[in-house]
Image (tube, rainbow, N blue to C red):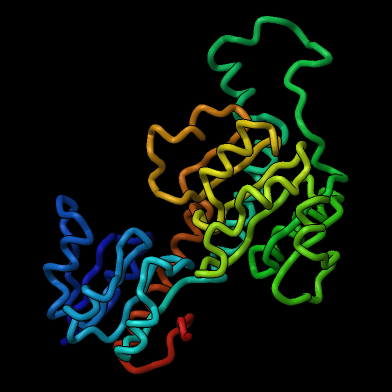
Length: 313
C-alpha cells in the first residue's frame, strides 16, 4: 500500500474517497515543512499547497517519492528540475481557476480605480460628513480606458475578455504574438500607453523583478498596475518608491514578494493601493475543482497513469 502525506485538508471529500492508499494527514499543531521533513522518508506521494517548500534536501530524503501533487497553479515552491531529474512526476492545477482568478483581478482593478475600499472606510469610520460634492472621491475612468496586458496566457486572455466588456482599448506584450482581439505592441509601447497595466506573466528566472523602476518610469503618472498572478515578477521596493513619488497613480495587488505580507510593509499605509490576501481562486466551486484535480493527479501518478495536468520541462 502506498503512503501519501497530505499537508492540508482540501475542500470537498476527494481525499476521503481515495481507496487503497494510506493517507497520512499533518496534525494542525505541526509546521507543514517540518512535518514533511520528518515523514518524507517513507512517502510514495505528497499532496501539498504553495506554502510548502519542496527543495533538493526534501527530495533527497524522499527516496520512495513517486509523485508530487500541488494544490496550486504556481510551482516555484518546488525544485522542479531536480524532482524531474529524480524521475518524480509533478502535478498542478491550472485552467480550473483561470476565470475565477480573472474575476478577482478585474475586481481589485475596479476597486483601485474607483477608490471603493477607501470609500467604504470613510463610511464605516463616520467620516462622510458632507452631502454630495462635485469633487469628492474622484477616481479614474475605466470604460474606454486602455488596458495593457503583460503576458497573453490563460489569465491574460480572461482579462482581455473582461476588458472588452468595459469597452476598453486592449494592448498587450507577450513573448509571442497571439491570435486575440487585442493589439500586440513592443513592451515599451505597452508601458507608455496603458491606463491599467495587468501583469499576467509566468514566474521564472527571466521574469523575476520584471517590473522595476526603469519600467515604472515609462508608465503614465495616471496609470495603475494590477497583479494577481505572481508576486515576485514585481520589484516591490521599486513599486513602493514609484507609488510614493507619484511616478504611477496606484496599484491593486493580490500577490506579493513575501507572503503573508509583513505588517511593516509600506503598502499597508497607502490609500492608493488595494490589497487582498492571495484569494484569486477563492470560491467554493473553484477550490473544490482544484482539489479534485490535485487528488486525481496524485492517484494517477501512483498508478502509472498520465496526470491531468503535469509539469514537464
